[in-house]
Length: 570
Ligand code: 6R9
Image (tube, rainbow, N blue to C red):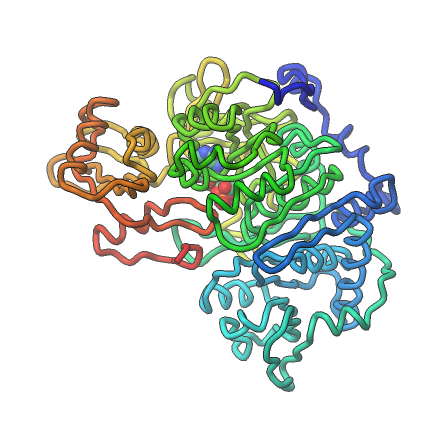
């Protein structure tokens, strides 16, 4: 393969794992005034003050805009935004929420927020009123940066802590009242100075708040601190394999942790050029983005790859994707089938890895220097201990299923669940360990395999079935674009397996096809895992980060309440 001329940043996993020390990584940063630091300084200003001053930090484009910003541009713009906030009286520790479509202004205002020591709260632009309300209310946010278009979804009159709304772009501006003031971003930016005194932070000070939904209750605010930089920097270096001349594209929205930890922090801490593409997903648009910027490293999610699989190979050949040298995936199981397809169409292995909002950074990964096993998430990151434990905290024998747990203390670990200490403690019931509630196995070679969420595993006729296994099989069928499998209560079998599938272009729903899919799993895996029911649907409900929401399908199927739908893509 012509892509792998360069040596990866991490050359030997075993050696790296054996000799690793986080202390050495810390030396990469400029620690001010006895240990103080600031993420935005390390991500932006440090490069603006170096040989990277005129290097492009951000390439941004959408249907209307096509712009680029150097590290120096980003330094001055984020300074200016920091001053806009300071002029409003915003102080260290206050929450500044960002509710906008992807745009350069999100990244400018996020960095400006961090520079004055405030906590940034990015939200998906597609959130509707209840979702916006829940997050702003829970966090007691005092500032919201949004657009006139999205403003109708912000019930600001019901949010007593919210004092200031900064509107980006054209549109109508409501009148100020005694409770709330409106500002026009452009005007405030013009008035503010571009010189700023950075707020130097304790490494344990709050930095970013990501809301994530669990299986019960309202979404919870996972707080990360400036110290996360140590982890995000090193994982980006070794797993994304960023080098000086790379052009890096992470397709994730900053409303999802992937869009900040590896859409912003990890790459910029390494001084990389970041591509951000606005607007909606379409295969043509994505492939032309790679072509246009000559993207070398591409970070996306299984749901996107599966949608790209629906494009035939002739369609792909219209684009010049030869710049690509490394591809990564996160967020849900990357079926082995997708890895094989990637090898065929891109000539590269898609590298799967595992982490969560709560872990703040990558924990388990397939590294560029190591042999990957398609379908596996890889091995623990150096400096991180991960294990498969049973309910008592004992390691289960290799090959057996247990909870994927992480030894407490890695640098990017969440520090709080906002105003919910009890939820936080719930993750640490096994003393010394963080319990992900993901079910996984570890094989003889130390590779970790995802089996499902603890709550998704199906028990049918006394057999344990991980839905992922069945879904993986289903997507191997030429007609299937995506599949989701749930357990449906059954008086005889405990549960039966029901599969929901969406079809690739050119296939039609029919009874015959449903039967064929059943047979396909039966033949490919085993009779007991073959779905007794197959339902073909136009689309499957998904979170905005692309995870198929099995619990929603299950609720629909059983006529139960669907719970919190704020993260569902409409
Ligand atoms: C980064 C992110 C976390 C949950 C996690 C797990 C699932 C993530 C995965 C994966 C299979 C992978 N997940 N990576 N499942 N293979 N490589 O996705 O964070 O949105 O908090 O989701 O996603 O179930 O527990 P988040």
